[in-house]
Length: 124
Image 1: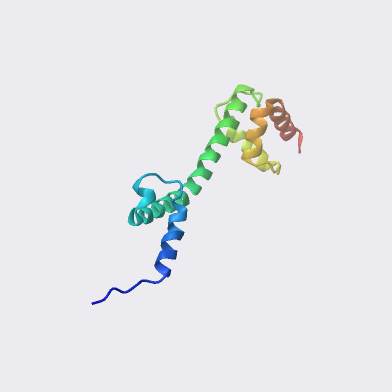
Image 2: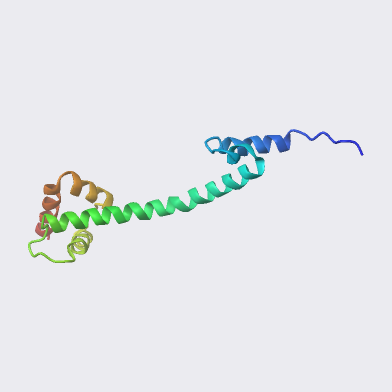
């Protein structure tokens, strides 16, 4: 039986997948089967880690806010649940500040965090 010359479709598919693997090393860059496996794995990991990144940053912001409220004694009475008190009072007084903004304020200028907490106390 004679050899059948293949068309360009399979080659186009492989070069497309190969373009995603341009920064890989070794066989992961050179062998088609390895390229497809590693690209699939990389896409799976990137999809999974986008959600994980959101969780990790939220945890970081909460930790920073909590540390700042404890160190700078945002509330008059020193308590172990100062972060939760701050967030509870923010929602109760309807001040719209998300955790990312609060963490930036806590890191860059903690005096402003104290001002925000005093603002919460004075609002009726």
